[in-house]
Image (cartoon, rainbow, N blue to C red; front, side):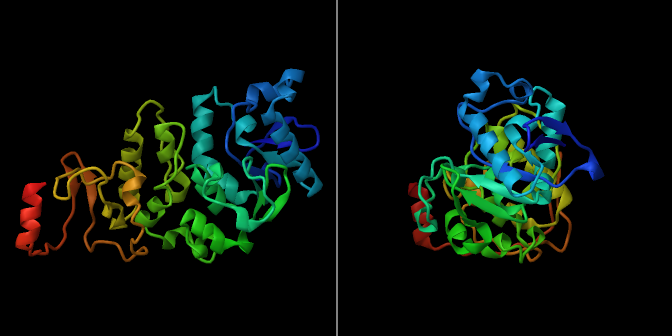
Length: 308
């Protein structure tokens, strides 16, 4: 794990038990972010970037709080190395969980009070920030001017309204194992990522999945994620999605195409959503044993379908 010194902004590599206490930054990327390579030799032009000022302020606050190191994704990951990028993304949930505390920087929020927070703030719209809110032990929100807004555990009701993430999860009184797969998926239903694949990759830690990154695979990444979930879990709520574009009675593949298809959010809590028999994805499709229930469709419904 590569950390940034809060004292002199130099980068240091640590392994396993040698990793010191550190803070971690959660933010949304802008146009002037500073890369790992640029941070190794920060010229005057680099230091004038908005991203460098963000790094400096994060380090300054962390240093004042007594922490010698911080982790910031823009400069602590060498993204020219596909192996390092893959390892970092698969480790990210654990890194946020192990941080002493997480600084959430809302660069487009210029208020000072909780009541002014809205879902229009970019941080509440991004896929990556879901795990960055849930994983850390302590989360502190900062405004665009780096003024402290509040610690997350003091306004979980407001956060639940903005994110649809259960207060029990935000308060750490419920573990992620107690939340169904469908419910977790619903947290991402209205989120976006710059690259299509990142929607699936941003969910890895929340779902407890580790898998290789293949940029260029597009929506296949989300399918791979679901297949990995089925291989590692007996939570059948992963099948509780609703198509967003097809007619109600069209036949479809058993897997969802995106988290948007889980936006109903009324899934049962795990482990209630499980079959008595195991189910799995095979080369022929989904294999499962389940009871069939006859549903009587009224003539009115039948006529409506025939006219659609």
